[in-house]
Length: 209
Image (cartoon, rainbow, N blue to C red):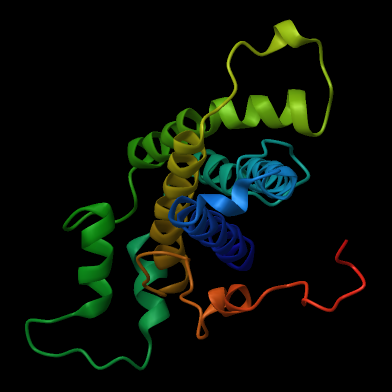
């Protein structure tokens, strides 16, 4: 799931970066077929990406399914299993990284992550993505009658759903793998805007009218 989430967040970076370019240079929006195409493709890709993380089908691997199965097995996220991931990490006086890490998530001294905490995360995941999932099911992957969806999601709702997925994923990734990260977003090691510094169609190109 981490690679999928990283790619999803990377698509968002590109989309909003191109919006900044368009705001600075509105001339590129003349005859805006290209930007319309770009926006439509981003919306579809982002909506489907969010849907994959919130898929409730029994035969899929999704963030929603993982949390739901954790609820079905109380105590599965135990302190003992988390601490075992830190074998080989030296324990310093007054600083036990493994137990401190688990305390920060499950509460000091708790033997396992509380079911109520998992249920809360599952509810947040559902609530933040509900409108996006409905849009995906009824407008992107299927074409249902117009009346079956009252309001289309807005871009800030796409962002909120991604942020919620990212936060919850990182929380449980830490518990299950002892890999601490604040976000699955990966900063690119190159300037992706560099391709925009040069005209795409050269002055002497046969593609020019």
